[in-house]
Length: 340
Image 1: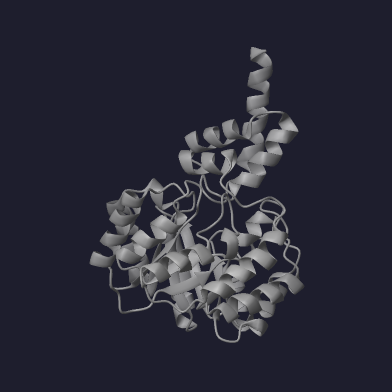
Image 2: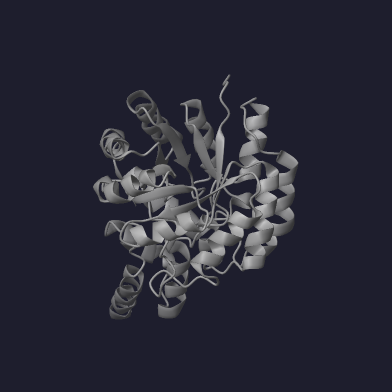
């Protein structure tokens, strides 16, 4: 396997990783992690609430620090990497985006459900006008066929996005699923293409390598896989495999290993790993951030959280609908009492 152009690493430890600790990174932790990630050679560091700009709320959980403090702390300590933010239209607004730009963020990923790219038009166009590195981020990509996903990507391309991502929010894509989506994007889009993986089916690294084989310009990773569900593609694991395959990138293996082992893993309240709940996410295709919500609801109402996730999948839930979980747990508890 040969490749001349280096792969751009977009680190999500400080954004997707927020989900794993209920958005409770302190400014001190953000500063330390930013320094370590920056020193490792990563190209972009994403730093917001797990659900993006405007995500700190009663519905998604309040972050420990303000949005301004999260972003400005990352900007202050990133000496080489760009600092990015995530925005989900309907949660984040144009005003949120403008403030993030004022605070020093230079990259923004505008995230929509895989079939709803049209809601991103205003946000993408505004970001482009502000001179930001603007990315279209198609979440839950397993829910659309490769052909339908391409049509949504073309909308984002027409709005001005410079990069468009296949986003495996549920960690539900197989390697063939990933290959088919990435190859269509590369063949039919003039933008850069990226891949965001989760490890719920133990395929985070494998899918990322497949994406790179198909020409992905950018990949998302996090130290120790810190992220929702079973976590994201782990930086140090992907770097090790890429080194063995002689795939060009700018990340130092030992530095990413040390940061993952010495700093990130001790921060984990709940081990970011493939267990029965995170595996259920990938198997049923449920958004990875639902894990902790389902686990808590299962304990509160005395039902198996796997049943909650399975029901949520049958209902077709997408990102941002965590509030469904309590209702589902209550209904399951009532049904089980009736059957006892």
